Figure 1 (cartoon, one colour):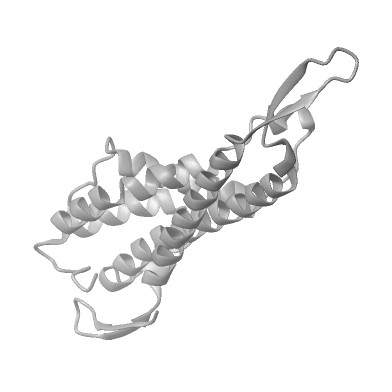
Figure 2 (cartoon, helix red, strand yellow; figure 1 turned 135 degrees about the vertical axis):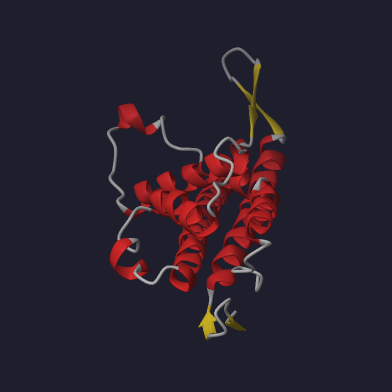
Length: 198
């Protein structure tokens, strides 16, 4: 989805920032559907009879192991794509605000970490701060942290593998707090209208 708009300075701009948010939301919903399917498969009870004792042992999802592994792989794929896309959106949005309002943005802000950009650019442009105590802010930082771990991925020894990040939890938290983020950002921006095109 390509957006064409006049920015706050009257310059015609063309970009695709929105597409990263859209991709993230679509991946969140796809991961949610796979989680529901997995949960339903695990509800199916099956019994194996021990031939020596005649006693039954109940298992959940035993005959569906291949499908369960496939669902888990697909779910992980959507979670990771959602996290990375949302991190791209956050960085693209703060870059857009900076590019439109700060003449030396490329030299002084572009190389900075996304978290620092959100703090410094918002303060510089609006002379205010976003709500650092809000759920959306901690969720945004989690998304950025997880994205950095993903794009600089390293395998782990088995002993550390169980400590993996719950990508779905991180993505869900960010998606569910996103509306609050938009409201706060629009309130900051209402006098200047820098992001009124969103």
